[in-house]
Length: 126
Image 1 (cartoon, rainbow, N blue to C red):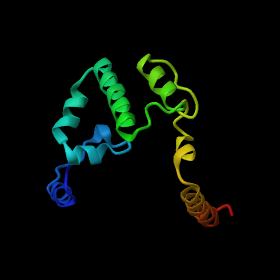
Image 2 (image 1 turned 30 degrees about the vertical axis):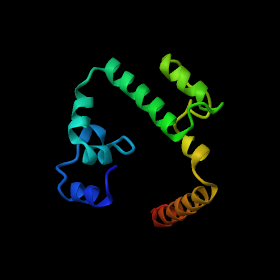
Image 3 (image 1 turned 90 degrees about the horizontal axis):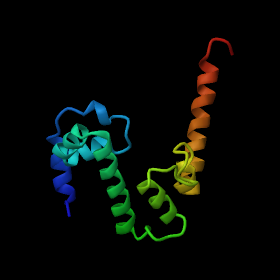
Image 4 (image 1 turned 180 degrees about the horizontal axis):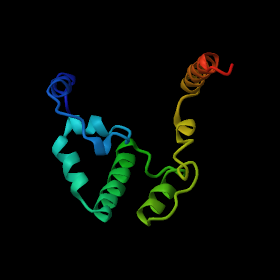
């Protein structure tokens, strides 16, 4: 297991961000942890990358004790079969709503609401 001190040393010694993973949740963090792994994954073809992703999803769910839950197993099965996953996994947009704690969603929506109000007040047409 990686110690917090090790992670902080890696963070301080990190090289430039990898643009190809900038849009992926945790992409830069993974690059900080193991840059060679990320570079290697980026060099693979789409079929290999997908096989690795399916393996990682299964391994993560197994490790977390989620793989055999009745709402997770069907998603892992269709992922392995390259079919469209069932709800709540079918649409990545609302996935945070399905898993984020209610208190966090309320805080996020109030922050978003304040931002939208301030943008509306700052706009020239208002």
